[in-house]
Image (cartoon, rainbow, N blue to C red; front, side):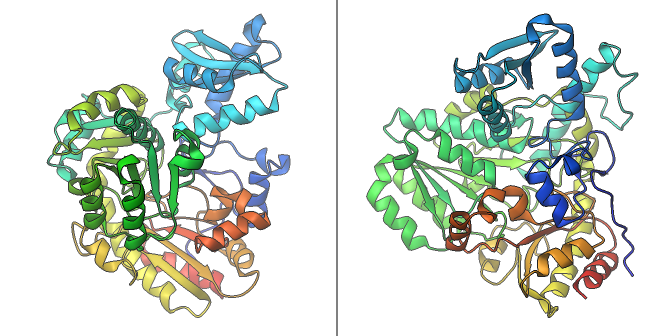
Length: 505
């Protein structure tokens, strides 16, 4: 019998009003969420902050629309800064009547409410770049306006939160000075800022081509596809992270034009680790810059800075382990050839964390080592269980055979695997039966003290799993649309395994 219980649709995970995950307990709920079915969405009080506009932010926007006559019949997007709002206006153009909004220190963009294209472009732009207003900032404004009685009570750090966060990060990145550790409001914004900073430097040298190594996270792919100079010519996707010969051929053909490479180490969701030292050497020989994202396992587990020009990482994962804020990091390798030029560009390019988010992160970051020790012990046991279960087809984790040597070359300790396991099941229709029966928390995100599982491709790439062309694209990248992504938390491993065993039958 599982020690876990089914969580109702829409329940916040872990429970704070600032939670970054919410329960999607059945595959019907997952599809309804993706298809915006009112029967599902009416239950969703929150969700992952870059994908779901927080209720506090919605309430604040509704207040301005109701109290300012010029806002009638308009949609208002509240953004993380004036800079982000100006960027969104440049994307929307004039056809939708887009207008800059500023009031009481808040900024945003409004457009005609009936314009569905403007709605879609606005949401995707702010999602891709991490540009939504922080839920804690929205909460503070609601309190100021008398629309909320008081902010949610939670543990925070009372001193210099940024200094405290950097003090702990220097344990993982000892070569970095404070000026090398640029904090962002989320991991995707750190990636965006690093991509822009490197692109600007390299474009002046005639370098505009970017390489995507392996299947990356959705919004990283979107940034590369949308914001390279000429996407059809300047964006190159290398499907196989282990095909070093293909990389060498591309560099031989385009080396003088390659601006940079973005690599996840390991990748999401197949958890594959490329030969990072060899990749770094190839980039350096040809003058390309290397952006490395170790979010799947974290900077705490992998020593990737010596091989990167910039390490970009989500601190939402493992560092903010309670699962109630987003934050990101862009760490400059001080020995990199462009380090001096990158520091000011990154500092100017990121959206800084809101002070209350930073104070909350500073209160949690000191527990990271303890949390990871528990996660690693559980991950090894759960992976071993899944690898031997007859209902499981494939299992991927940090030290799967294909990647073990490459991963362990970078790992700070033999058991420093992170908590991510992805797997597929045997049999047609097995996903729905298993997922609906499973009594584990089900929702987006990972790297929390709470174990989380989700049908990853459905949540990240619903357009691909529901179309013939999309399924063909997934197959070409050796991705099963029914892949499950499980990230182990700090609960007893026996309880996690019992829940999996119950659902597997």
